[in-house]
Image (tube, rainbow, N blue to C red; front, side, top):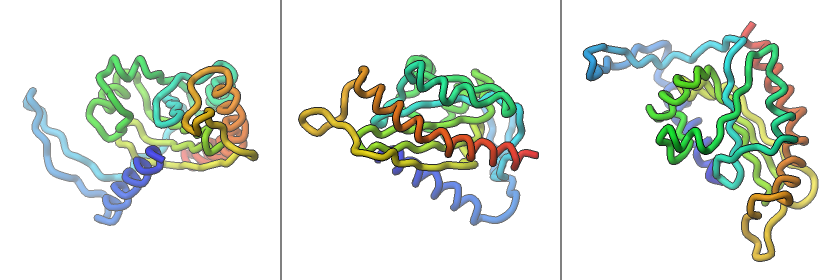
Length: 196
């Protein structure tokens, strides 16, 4: 739910900027080193091959994907470039407490990892659903997204709350991830076609 709220806020911000008109060079920003930059509200162009950071979120937290899940998503990039897994330790070391793609901290992190794009994958074992969002790493501009619901009920612990990390949760997220593969393939193919 938290991801949906963030996604909605991100999309509202993008739509608000888009409603303002064509390519607008925004206000000039002056930095401590004396350099001046202009904020550009122009939609970035897709360009491949690229370095694509893959972020996996489960129950609203950044997590590392088990090996079986990584094979599903990280092996899909060759014509698009290179997929790079982004883990929670890396983001904590970069000073990020949450994943805010519009923050200067995230933009610095993305630049330090030479990321062009970001693929955010959210898996919700409790609802048995998965979402994916493809963003520009420098601006946070969303290019594509999709959502899938795996058949069956979601999993919860005895008390009805989130399942702790471990084999049971890994099996549930793998099931959702496997149902995401056709949508992921279609989304990435569509993005590759747009870039041509």
